[in-house]
Image 1 (cartoon, one colour):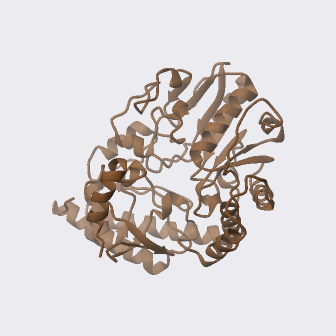
Image 2: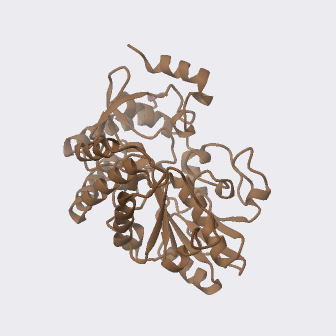
Image 3: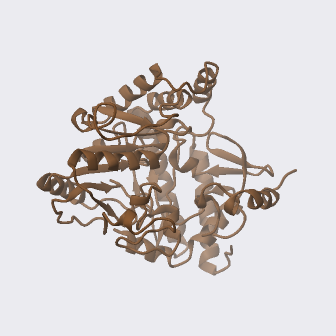
Length: 430
């Protein structure tokens, strides 16, 4: 039987770092990554046959759980008709109709292949529509790895020692690439100048742990963008169609000018989208001067999977997701409180975070201070040893799915009680 260690060693020889995305590398928690051989519902199995309750769920993409039978059937049927054509399909139109029908104010969308591509294209669109250059983003918000947005980003980038302001987070990103990017603290409304094209924000920050918007923050951004004629962009790659039928716009009551989506809308396959009003979207080629294209955009397998998922996500589904996430958050909070360890377990809808400390962070500096306590690696490995898979990085969130049962949550909470007790006694180890 192939082991995780063997596969990792083989991977190191042919893949930089042995993995195809840095967040999978276990660098921030230590140890060898588990290699998934299969998944079903709330569970994944590694190549050695160990089963885990999975709270990663492909970082939120698998909202129904893994290998949902209806999604598998839709992909299979679509694959039988061909996997890509380089020509438009009915599925693209139907998925676009579904997305626009759900989000208040979004009249048109352009389908792409990833969240990174969606954010990159949306920023280009905003610059083209306004004729301005400056991008405003917030420290700890992650908008993919395009050059202009890779400054003071969250998620896996935050696990490195990074700068703030306009210092690139990556070698190979020139100072010029981020010269027109202004990075500001999350949850503080800035005073904008009239050279700002777009303000990019995660309406709920889920790439620096889970940091919720303070009252008035999003409303203040909307008003300030209106004042200077800038566009407001909601990056809903994580929150889109996870927080509710209409995503963050519906749940939080603030309407941006441009949206970005990913994860859920692909049903587990590579898919992203960006959208806005018909007036804003008219700036895109072939109608307008802002060029964007993609051979695999609107891939027929991904549109079939995404449409199958979205049609299952009604108000009853979100009520079940909320209840599952609430039980998880309450159980985790109690597990640490009973062990005498200070934690904060924020939750908004089906998103659950965990910070060590006494106060919920409101920005990236405060989230980083929690991470700097250094307790996450021991917590992560303690849970993994007990059959619970969390993201191997302290800046990620937990994604309970519709496949997680009450019994799954009870098992997760029981494991957390044991790990918290070990942490309190100083016995937990990586």
